Amino acid sequence: MKLYDFLESGNGYKCRLLLSQLGRPFELVLLDILRGETRTPDFLARNPNGRIPLLELDDGRRLVESGAILLYLAEGTPFLPDDPFARAEVCQWLFFEQYSHEPNIAVARFWRHFQWAERAGDPYWERALAERQAQGRAALEVMETHLQSRDFFVDERYTIADVALYAYTHVADEGGFDLAPHRAVRAWLDRVADQPGHVPITQADFDA
Amino acid sequence: MKLYDFLESGNGYKCRLLLSQLGRPFELVLLDILRGETRTPDFLARNPNGRIPLLELDDGRRLVESGAILLYLAEGTPFLPDDPFARAEVCQWLFFEQYSHEPNIAVARFWRHFQWAERAGDPYWERALAERQAQGRAALEVMETHLQSRDFFVDERYTIADVALYAYTHVADEGGFDLAPHRAVRAWLDRVADQPGHVPITQADFDA
Image (cartoon, rainbow over the protein chains, first blue to last red):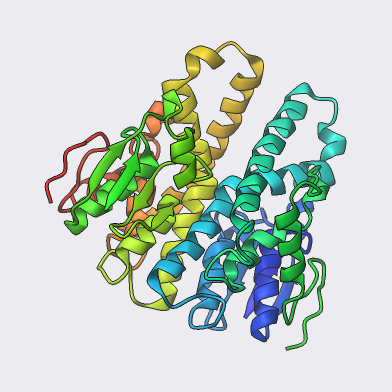
């Protein structure tokens, strides 16, 4: 399998982390999204939406969207429950991550961390950042409430719901978020980082 | 089952449409999101993220996020393929809808259709709307490209990927989007509307 990816991407990291924990070999094809390498004709032929991560199977079939890649890879493994309702709860958190969490926490991080030189001082982008940060804090509060009585998001065990939410939460400070008040979230981050096979976000070498 | 919902919501409509096509009885509990009825203590106890749709099973278990509700209800039915890769492709389009489509097309519609009196004339909101509309047009272009060689999004048949993408595409004009140039999208909208058990977005009465 090939994973087309950008090392600083939390969406790509979710896939790398799960592949590592599953012990599945893959080739990492790194593209620089900051230099438009996901908007070339060659890459747009692979994904017309121009986004990484993209998983290419050995037979050439391709899959995009980190949540879909996680669900595909986790099927039949301990990272995705068999029980229909527990599976649905995993999906619920994957969609929460992509709708309420990533567009605020990851986008605030992307703007501040990679693009602030070109946005700083523009009142539009200052206000847009503040809006995203306010909504990102609300998403962290939803996580905090949920984790106050649980060790993991679903089924009292580590699943791809935790993988997905860990990716951008553990670098939320780069988006200007302060996790200090979120004690349950911080304890959960530690539990996730302690899982067997855990790798850091910028690890590029994978032995399988 | 109870579905907590807002009739003009495309996210809620996805669930109503699938429930209708599955012939499953449900009670519709309508909340007015414009009057804060999803931010009351009572509703926040059901969903701390304060959003509809919310599916409450007869045993009291609750599920949120339209994509997760669709996957849960469609399991074991013709609306979700059995083949693992085709299932993953369905999920891919569900996540595309929630990340690249809904936040642009549905949000532009929500601002223009329900909240423009309080936003019009503010340069921030005028520019924010223009940004969402540009990204919404890009999402429609991805759909157009995909549908130019296909009748439905996945597996050459009507699945919950079509249900999810139909919901806000068929009312995209209310967000200021012109579907005239998107011939393949328009032909697909007609095919979806022709499916057995189809109901319009504002239908509130369901006999099951």
